[in-house]
Length: 470
Image 1: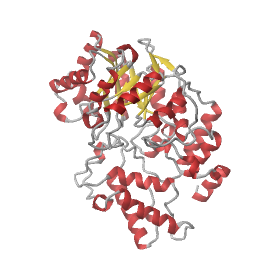
Image 2 (image 1 turned 45 degrees about the vertical axis):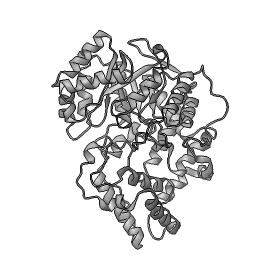
Image 3 (image 1 turned 90 degrees about the vertical axis):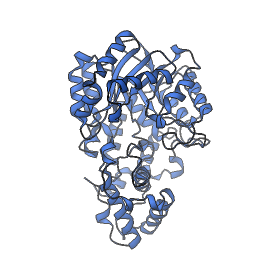
Protein backbone atom coordinates (compact mmCIF):
# COMPACT_ATOMS: atom_id res chain seq x y z
CA UNK A 1 0.00 0.00 0.00
CA UNK A 2 1.42 3.38 -0.96
CA UNK A 3 0.90 6.63 0.93
CA UNK A 4 -1.94 7.78 -1.32
CA UNK A 5 -3.85 4.51 -0.81
CA UNK A 6 -3.21 4.68 2.90
CA UNK A 7 -4.69 8.15 3.23
CA UNK A 8 -7.64 7.19 1.07
CA UNK A 9 -8.39 4.29 3.39
CA UNK A 10 -8.45 6.63 6.34
CA UNK A 11 -11.15 8.67 4.66
CA UNK A 12 -12.91 11.54 6.33
CA UNK A 13 -11.10 10.99 9.64
CA UNK A 14 -8.22 13.04 8.32
CA UNK A 15 -10.40 16.12 8.41
CA UNK A 16 -9.99 16.47 12.18
CA UNK A 17 -7.73 19.45 12.78
CA UNK A 18 -4.30 18.94 14.26
CA UNK A 19 -5.19 21.27 17.12
CA UNK A 20 -7.70 18.72 18.36
CA UNK A 21 -5.22 15.84 18.28
CA UNK A 22 -3.00 16.76 21.21
CA UNK A 23 -2.48 14.05 23.79
CA UNK A 24 -0.99 14.48 27.24
CA UNK A 25 0.95 17.70 27.65
CA UNK A 26 3.66 18.67 30.12
CA UNK A 27 2.95 20.09 33.54
CA UNK A 28 1.02 23.30 33.34
CA UNK A 29 -0.76 22.46 30.10
CA UNK A 30 -4.22 21.11 29.46
CA UNK A 31 -5.10 17.81 27.84
CA UNK A 32 -7.01 18.30 24.62
CA UNK A 33 -9.92 15.95 24.19
CA UNK A 34 -9.29 13.95 27.36
CA UNK A 35 -12.63 14.69 28.98
CA UNK A 36 -13.59 17.29 31.53
CA UNK A 37 -15.27 17.22 34.90
CA UNK A 38 -14.55 15.71 38.28
CA UNK A 39 -12.63 12.42 38.39
CA UNK A 40 -14.42 10.08 40.81
CA UNK A 41 -12.45 8.81 43.80
CA UNK A 42 -14.49 5.62 44.25
CA UNK A 43 -14.77 4.17 40.72
CA UNK A 44 -11.33 2.60 40.15
CA UNK A 45 -11.45 -0.86 38.56
CA UNK A 46 -9.64 -3.54 40.57
CA UNK A 47 -8.40 -7.01 39.67
CA UNK A 48 -7.98 -9.80 42.21
CA UNK A 49 -4.65 -11.57 42.55
CA UNK A 50 -5.72 -15.26 42.58
CA UNK A 51 -2.90 -16.26 44.93
CA UNK A 52 -3.09 -13.60 47.65
CA UNK A 53 -6.54 -12.12 47.12
CA UNK A 54 -4.97 -8.65 46.71
CA UNK A 55 -7.35 -6.14 45.12
CA UNK A 56 -5.00 -4.40 42.72
CA UNK A 57 -5.88 -1.23 40.83
CA UNK A 58 -5.96 -1.78 37.07
CA UNK A 59 -3.88 1.41 36.76
CA UNK A 60 -0.41 0.93 38.20
CA UNK A 61 2.02 3.79 38.77
CA UNK A 62 5.36 3.32 36.99
CA UNK A 63 7.99 5.22 38.96
CA UNK A 64 10.73 5.57 36.34
CA UNK A 65 9.81 9.07 35.16
CA UNK A 66 9.42 11.15 38.31
CA UNK A 67 9.41 14.93 37.72
CA UNK A 68 12.45 17.08 38.38
CA UNK A 69 12.62 20.59 39.82
CA UNK A 70 13.15 21.90 36.28
CA UNK A 71 9.90 20.34 35.05
CA UNK A 72 11.67 17.48 33.29
CA UNK A 73 11.80 13.71 33.79
CA UNK A 74 14.36 12.18 36.16
CA UNK A 75 14.84 9.36 33.68
CA UNK A 76 16.30 11.83 31.19
CA UNK A 77 18.63 14.01 33.28
CA UNK A 78 20.46 14.42 36.57
CA UNK A 79 18.36 17.34 37.81
CA UNK A 80 17.10 17.01 41.38
CA UNK A 81 13.81 15.16 41.67
CA UNK A 82 10.92 17.34 42.84
CA UNK A 83 9.98 15.43 46.00
CA UNK A 84 7.11 17.77 46.77
CA UNK A 85 5.58 17.12 43.34
CA UNK A 86 6.18 13.37 43.67
CA UNK A 87 4.31 13.48 46.99
CA UNK A 88 1.45 15.36 45.34
CA UNK A 89 1.20 12.83 42.52
CA UNK A 90 1.28 9.87 44.90
CA UNK A 91 -1.33 11.45 47.17
CA UNK A 92 -3.64 12.13 44.23
CA UNK A 93 -3.16 8.63 42.83
CA UNK A 94 -3.94 6.93 46.14
CA UNK A 95 -6.93 9.25 46.73
CA UNK A 96 -8.32 8.10 43.37
CA UNK A 97 -7.78 4.40 43.99
CA UNK A 98 -4.31 3.63 42.58
CA UNK A 99 -2.54 1.20 44.90
CA UNK A 100 0.24 -0.43 42.80
CA UNK A 101 3.57 1.40 42.56
CA UNK A 102 6.35 -0.07 40.42
CA UNK A 103 9.98 1.01 40.88
CA UNK A 104 13.54 -0.33 40.54
CA UNK A 105 17.06 0.38 41.82
CA UNK A 106 17.88 1.38 38.23
CA UNK A 107 15.08 3.91 37.65
CA UNK A 108 15.65 7.67 37.64
CA UNK A 109 19.41 7.09 37.55
CA UNK A 110 19.23 5.14 40.80
CA UNK A 111 17.02 7.58 42.72
CA UNK A 112 13.49 6.25 42.20
CA UNK A 113 13.27 3.88 45.16
CA UNK A 114 14.37 6.60 47.59
CA UNK A 115 11.86 9.25 46.53
CA UNK A 116 9.11 6.66 46.07
CA UNK A 117 9.74 5.37 49.57
CA UNK A 118 9.47 8.88 51.02
CA UNK A 119 6.18 9.54 49.22
CA UNK A 120 4.56 6.20 50.04
CA UNK A 121 5.70 6.01 53.68
CA UNK A 122 3.43 8.98 54.42
CA UNK A 123 0.45 6.65 53.92
CA UNK A 124 -0.67 3.55 55.85
CA UNK A 125 1.20 0.49 54.58
CA UNK A 126 -2.02 -1.36 53.75
CA UNK A 127 -3.01 1.39 51.30
CA UNK A 128 -0.50 0.41 48.62
CA UNK A 129 1.49 -2.42 47.06
CA UNK A 130 5.18 -1.93 46.30
CA UNK A 131 6.74 -3.61 43.27
CA UNK A 132 10.48 -3.43 42.78
CA UNK A 133 13.14 -5.41 40.97
CA UNK A 134 16.49 -7.07 41.35
CA UNK A 135 18.14 -4.94 38.66
CA UNK A 136 21.54 -6.64 38.71
CA UNK A 137 22.39 -5.86 35.08
CA UNK A 138 26.11 -5.14 35.52
CA UNK A 139 28.43 -8.17 35.89
CA UNK A 140 29.79 -6.53 39.04
CA UNK A 141 26.39 -7.17 40.67
CA UNK A 142 26.03 -10.81 39.62
CA UNK A 143 27.65 -12.25 42.73
CA UNK A 144 25.37 -13.57 45.44
CA UNK A 145 26.67 -11.00 47.92
CA UNK A 146 26.17 -8.03 45.58
CA UNK A 147 22.67 -9.11 44.54
CA UNK A 148 21.56 -9.67 48.13
CA UNK A 149 22.96 -6.26 49.06
CA UNK A 150 20.91 -4.69 46.25
CA UNK A 151 17.75 -6.40 47.49
CA UNK A 152 18.30 -5.30 51.08
CA UNK A 153 19.02 -1.76 49.98
CA UNK A 154 15.65 -1.73 48.20
CA UNK A 155 13.94 -2.52 51.49
CA UNK A 156 15.85 0.32 53.14
CA UNK A 157 15.19 2.90 50.43
CA UNK A 158 11.50 2.00 50.23
CA UNK A 159 11.18 2.20 54.04
CA UNK A 160 9.49 -1.17 54.32
CA UNK A 161 10.19 -4.60 55.79
CA UNK A 162 8.54 -6.53 52.94
CA UNK A 163 8.07 -6.24 49.17
CA UNK A 164 4.62 -6.98 47.77
CA UNK A 165 5.75 -7.75 44.19
CA UNK A 166 9.39 -8.65 43.55
CA UNK A 167 10.70 -9.12 40.01
CA UNK A 168 13.74 -10.54 38.31
CA UNK A 169 14.39 -7.54 36.09
CA UNK A 170 14.31 -7.83 32.29
CA UNK A 171 15.22 -11.47 31.77
CA UNK A 172 16.10 -12.28 28.17
CA UNK A 173 17.58 -8.86 27.44
CA UNK A 174 21.03 -8.58 25.87
CA UNK A 175 23.01 -10.43 23.25
CA UNK A 176 23.10 -13.67 25.21
CA UNK A 177 19.88 -13.66 27.15
CA UNK A 178 20.05 -17.25 28.42
CA UNK A 179 23.63 -16.97 29.65
CA UNK A 180 22.89 -13.71 31.47
CA UNK A 181 19.71 -15.14 33.00
CA UNK A 182 21.71 -18.03 34.44
CA UNK A 183 24.54 -15.79 35.65
CA UNK A 184 22.25 -13.21 37.27
CA UNK A 185 19.79 -15.52 39.02
CA UNK A 186 20.64 -19.24 38.87
CA UNK A 187 24.37 -19.87 39.12
CA UNK A 188 24.68 -17.56 42.13
CA UNK A 189 21.68 -19.05 43.94
CA UNK A 190 19.80 -15.74 44.02
CA UNK A 191 16.51 -17.16 42.74
CA UNK A 192 16.63 -19.75 45.53
CA UNK A 193 17.32 -16.90 47.98
CA UNK A 194 14.32 -14.91 46.73
CA UNK A 195 12.09 -17.97 46.99
CA UNK A 196 13.21 -18.39 50.60
CA UNK A 197 12.40 -14.71 51.22
CA UNK A 198 8.94 -15.33 49.78
CA UNK A 199 8.46 -18.29 52.11
CA UNK A 200 9.52 -16.09 55.04
CA UNK A 201 6.98 -13.42 54.04
CA UNK A 202 9.46 -10.68 53.19
CA UNK A 203 8.43 -11.10 49.56
CA UNK A 204 4.70 -11.63 49.04
CA UNK A 205 4.73 -12.26 45.27
CA UNK A 206 7.67 -13.30 43.08
CA UNK A 207 7.79 -12.85 39.32
CA UNK A 208 9.88 -11.53 36.44
CA UNK A 209 9.78 -8.94 33.69
CA UNK A 210 10.61 -10.14 30.21
CA UNK A 211 12.45 -8.51 27.30
CA UNK A 212 13.89 -10.07 24.18
CA UNK A 213 15.03 -13.69 24.00
CA UNK A 214 11.92 -15.87 23.79
CA UNK A 215 13.89 -18.95 24.84
CA UNK A 216 14.42 -17.41 28.28
CA UNK A 217 10.70 -16.64 28.65
CA UNK A 218 9.78 -20.18 27.66
CA UNK A 219 12.34 -21.73 29.98
CA UNK A 220 11.10 -19.70 32.94
CA UNK A 221 7.51 -20.74 32.25
CA UNK A 222 8.51 -24.38 31.66
CA UNK A 223 9.85 -24.36 35.24
CA UNK A 224 6.71 -22.78 36.69
CA UNK A 225 6.04 -25.89 38.81
CA UNK A 226 9.42 -25.34 40.47
CA UNK A 227 9.34 -21.58 40.91
CA UNK A 228 5.59 -20.96 41.20
CA UNK A 229 5.64 -17.55 39.54
CA UNK A 230 2.99 -15.33 41.12
CA UNK A 231 2.94 -12.88 38.20
CA UNK A 232 4.88 -11.97 35.05
CA UNK A 233 5.43 -8.52 33.53
CA UNK A 234 5.23 -8.32 29.74
CA UNK A 235 5.06 -5.65 27.04
CA UNK A 236 1.53 -5.50 25.62
CA UNK A 237 -0.24 -2.95 23.44
CA UNK A 238 -2.37 -2.98 20.32
CA UNK A 239 0.60 -2.54 17.98
CA UNK A 240 2.70 -5.28 19.59
CA UNK A 241 -0.25 -7.68 19.81
CA UNK A 242 0.39 -9.03 16.30
CA UNK A 243 3.18 -6.82 14.92
CA UNK A 244 6.03 -7.04 17.47
CA UNK A 245 7.90 -9.66 15.49
CA UNK A 246 7.25 -7.79 12.26
CA UNK A 247 8.73 -4.64 13.78
CA UNK A 248 11.78 -6.59 14.88
CA UNK A 249 12.40 -10.34 14.33
CA UNK A 250 13.89 -10.69 17.83
CA UNK A 251 10.69 -9.47 19.49
CA UNK A 252 7.68 -11.67 20.28
CA UNK A 253 4.05 -10.81 19.63
CA UNK A 254 2.16 -9.89 22.80
CA UNK A 255 -0.67 -12.22 21.76
CA UNK A 256 1.67 -15.18 22.30
CA UNK A 257 3.16 -13.88 25.57
CA UNK A 258 -0.24 -13.19 27.11
CA UNK A 259 -1.62 -16.50 25.86
CA UNK A 260 1.19 -18.48 27.50
CA UNK A 261 0.53 -16.78 30.83
CA UNK A 262 -3.24 -17.22 30.54
CA UNK A 263 -2.85 -20.97 29.90
CA UNK A 264 -1.04 -21.31 33.22
CA UNK A 265 -3.27 -18.92 35.15
CA UNK A 266 -0.38 -16.51 35.83
CA UNK A 267 -1.50 -12.88 36.22
CA UNK A 268 0.07 -10.45 33.75
CA UNK A 269 1.42 -7.04 34.70
CA UNK A 270 1.55 -4.84 31.60
CA UNK A 271 4.40 -2.50 30.71
CA UNK A 272 4.67 -0.24 27.66
CA UNK A 273 0.92 0.09 27.03
CA UNK A 274 1.84 3.24 25.06
CA UNK A 275 5.09 1.87 23.61
CA UNK A 276 7.10 4.54 25.41
CA UNK A 277 4.61 7.21 24.36
CA UNK A 278 4.53 6.23 20.67
CA UNK A 279 0.83 5.33 20.85
CA UNK A 280 -0.02 8.76 22.18
CA UNK A 281 2.01 10.46 19.42
CA UNK A 282 0.77 8.59 16.37
CA UNK A 283 0.68 9.92 12.83
CA UNK A 284 -1.78 12.80 12.47
CA UNK A 285 -4.02 10.75 10.19
CA UNK A 286 -4.10 7.81 12.61
CA UNK A 287 -4.90 10.20 15.47
CA UNK A 288 -7.74 11.61 13.38
CA UNK A 289 -9.11 8.10 12.90
CA UNK A 290 -9.15 7.54 16.69
CA UNK A 291 -10.56 10.97 17.47
CA UNK A 292 -13.37 10.49 14.98
CA UNK A 293 -14.58 7.52 17.04
CA UNK A 294 -14.14 9.12 20.49
CA UNK A 295 -13.83 12.91 20.12
CA UNK A 296 -13.84 13.51 23.88
CA UNK A 297 -11.15 10.94 24.68
CA UNK A 298 -7.39 11.23 24.30
CA UNK A 299 -5.52 9.15 21.76
CA UNK A 300 -3.73 7.44 24.66
CA UNK A 301 -7.00 6.26 26.22
CA UNK A 302 -7.49 3.72 23.42
CA UNK A 303 -4.21 2.03 24.33
CA UNK A 304 -5.04 1.91 28.04
CA UNK A 305 -8.49 0.47 27.44
CA UNK A 306 -6.95 -2.15 25.17
CA UNK A 307 -4.39 -3.28 27.74
CA UNK A 308 -6.95 -3.39 30.53
CA UNK A 309 -9.57 -5.34 28.57
CA UNK A 310 -7.88 -8.72 29.01
CA UNK A 311 -9.15 -10.60 32.08
CA UNK A 312 -5.74 -12.04 32.95
CA UNK A 313 -4.21 -8.57 33.35
CA UNK A 314 -3.62 -7.63 36.99
CA UNK A 315 -2.50 -4.04 36.41
CA UNK A 316 -1.33 -1.75 33.61
CA UNK A 317 1.74 0.38 34.33
CA UNK A 318 2.12 3.97 33.23
CA UNK A 319 5.07 6.25 33.94
CA UNK A 320 3.17 9.44 34.76
CA UNK A 321 5.50 12.42 35.10
CA UNK A 322 2.83 15.11 35.25
CA UNK A 323 -0.58 15.47 36.89
CA UNK A 324 -2.12 15.74 33.42
CA UNK A 325 -0.88 12.24 32.58
CA UNK A 326 -2.26 10.81 35.80
CA UNK A 327 -5.66 12.46 35.38
CA UNK A 328 -6.03 11.32 31.78
CA UNK A 329 -5.24 7.71 32.69
CA UNK A 330 -7.57 7.81 35.69
CA UNK A 331 -10.37 8.76 33.31
CA UNK A 332 -9.72 5.55 31.38
CA UNK A 333 -9.89 3.36 34.47
CA UNK A 334 -12.45 4.91 36.85
CA UNK A 335 -14.09 2.70 35.84
CA UNK A 336 -12.59 0.76 32.94
CA UNK A 337 -14.96 0.27 30.03
CA UNK A 338 -13.55 -2.84 28.29
CA UNK A 339 -13.33 -2.72 24.53
CA UNK A 340 -16.08 -4.41 22.58
CA UNK A 341 -15.23 -6.98 19.91
CA UNK A 342 -15.93 -4.36 17.25
CA UNK A 343 -13.62 -1.84 18.97
CA UNK A 344 -10.91 -4.51 19.18
CA UNK A 345 -11.19 -5.07 15.41
CA UNK A 346 -11.05 -1.30 14.89
CA UNK A 347 -7.79 -1.09 16.88
CA UNK A 348 -6.26 -4.05 15.07
CA UNK A 349 -7.09 -2.35 11.76
CA UNK A 350 -5.53 0.83 13.12
CA UNK A 351 -2.38 -1.10 14.02
CA UNK A 352 -2.23 -2.51 10.48
CA UNK A 353 -2.41 1.02 9.09
CA UNK A 354 0.26 2.28 11.46
CA UNK A 355 2.66 -0.34 10.14
CA UNK A 356 2.62 1.44 6.79
CA UNK A 357 4.68 4.29 8.26
CA UNK A 358 8.48 3.87 8.54
CA UNK A 359 8.92 4.82 12.20
CA UNK A 360 11.76 3.39 14.30
CA UNK A 361 10.47 1.36 17.31
CA UNK A 362 12.27 3.52 19.87
CA UNK A 363 10.54 3.74 23.27
CA UNK A 364 12.90 6.44 24.58
CA UNK A 365 13.99 4.15 27.43
CA UNK A 366 17.55 5.49 27.13
CA UNK A 367 19.11 2.10 27.91
CA UNK A 368 21.38 2.83 24.90
CA UNK A 369 22.81 5.88 26.67
CA UNK A 370 25.26 7.29 27.32
CA UNK A 371 26.89 6.95 23.93
CA UNK A 372 30.69 6.94 24.32
CA UNK A 373 30.89 9.39 21.42
CA UNK A 374 28.25 11.77 22.77
CA UNK A 375 25.53 10.98 20.20
CA UNK A 376 21.97 11.71 21.34
CA UNK A 377 20.55 8.42 20.06
CA UNK A 378 16.99 8.76 21.43
CA UNK A 379 16.81 12.42 20.37
CA UNK A 380 17.68 11.52 16.77
CA UNK A 381 15.25 8.61 16.55
CA UNK A 382 12.40 10.55 18.18
CA UNK A 383 12.90 13.52 15.86
CA UNK A 384 12.76 11.19 12.87
CA UNK A 385 9.58 9.53 14.17
CA UNK A 386 8.00 12.92 14.87
CA UNK A 387 8.59 13.96 11.26
CA UNK A 388 7.08 10.69 10.04
CA UNK A 389 4.00 11.18 12.21
CA UNK A 390 3.55 14.80 11.14
CA UNK A 391 3.92 14.01 7.45
CA UNK A 392 7.28 15.74 7.16
CA UNK A 393 9.10 12.85 5.52
CA UNK A 394 8.76 13.47 1.75
CA UNK A 395 9.14 10.38 -0.42
CA UNK A 396 10.77 12.27 -3.27
CA UNK A 397 11.71 15.74 -4.51
CA UNK A 398 8.49 15.67 -6.53
CA UNK A 399 6.30 15.34 -3.42
CA UNK A 400 3.79 18.18 -3.06
CA UNK A 401 4.99 19.01 0.47
CA UNK A 402 8.70 18.61 -0.29
CA UNK A 403 9.86 22.15 0.54
CA UNK A 404 7.80 22.43 3.74
CA UNK A 405 8.81 18.95 4.92
CA UNK A 406 12.48 19.51 4.04
CA UNK A 407 12.59 22.65 6.18
CA UNK A 408 10.68 21.04 9.05
CA UNK A 409 13.04 18.06 9.13
CA UNK A 410 16.33 19.95 8.87
CA UNK A 411 15.46 22.93 11.08
CA UNK A 412 13.80 20.68 13.65
CA UNK A 413 16.81 18.35 13.64
CA UNK A 414 19.22 21.17 14.49
CA UNK A 415 16.90 22.51 17.17
CA UNK A 416 16.27 19.18 18.90
CA UNK A 417 19.74 17.61 18.58
CA UNK A 418 22.98 19.66 18.83
CA UNK A 419 25.19 19.34 15.75
CA UNK A 420 27.98 17.50 17.61
CA UNK A 421 25.46 14.91 18.84
CA UNK A 422 23.84 14.13 15.48
CA UNK A 423 23.91 10.86 13.56
CA UNK A 424 26.86 11.74 11.33
CA UNK A 425 29.17 11.29 14.34
CA UNK A 426 28.27 7.60 14.82
CA UNK A 427 31.29 5.34 14.18
CA UNK A 428 29.28 2.10 14.33
CA UNK A 429 30.88 0.70 17.50
CA UNK A 430 27.57 -1.12 18.17
CA UNK A 431 27.76 -0.82 21.97
CA UNK A 432 24.28 0.71 22.07
CA UNK A 433 22.62 -2.19 20.25
CA UNK A 434 23.38 -4.67 23.03
CA UNK A 435 21.41 -2.59 25.54
CA UNK A 436 18.28 -1.93 23.43
CA UNK A 437 15.19 -3.82 24.72
CA UNK A 438 13.55 -3.32 21.30
CA UNK A 439 16.56 -4.85 19.52
CA UNK A 440 16.89 -1.87 17.17
CA UNK A 441 19.91 -1.99 14.89
CA UNK A 442 20.85 1.47 16.10
CA UNK A 443 24.01 2.18 14.03
CA UNK A 444 22.20 1.18 10.83
CA UNK A 445 19.21 3.38 11.69
CA UNK A 446 21.49 6.31 12.49
CA UNK A 447 23.29 5.81 9.19
CA UNK A 448 19.96 5.77 7.33
CA UNK A 449 18.71 8.92 9.07
CA UNK A 450 22.01 10.68 8.44
CA UNK A 451 21.83 9.71 4.78
CA UNK A 452 18.29 11.06 4.59
CA UNK A 453 19.38 14.36 6.16
CA UNK A 454 22.30 14.65 3.73
CA UNK A 455 20.04 13.93 0.76
CA UNK A 456 17.68 16.66 1.94
CA UNK A 457 20.55 19.14 2.31
CA UNK A 458 21.86 18.38 -1.18
CA UNK A 459 18.48 18.08 -2.89
CA UNK A 460 19.11 14.48 -4.05
CA UNK A 461 16.57 11.74 -4.72
CA UNK A 462 15.23 10.55 -1.36
CA UNK A 463 13.91 7.07 -2.11
CA UNK A 464 17.02 5.06 -1.11
CA UNK A 465 17.37 6.95 2.16
CA UNK A 466 13.89 6.37 3.58
CA UNK A 467 13.81 2.58 3.37
CA UNK A 468 13.57 1.04 6.83
CA UNK A 469 16.50 -0.99 8.11
CA UNK A 470 15.66 -4.67 8.16
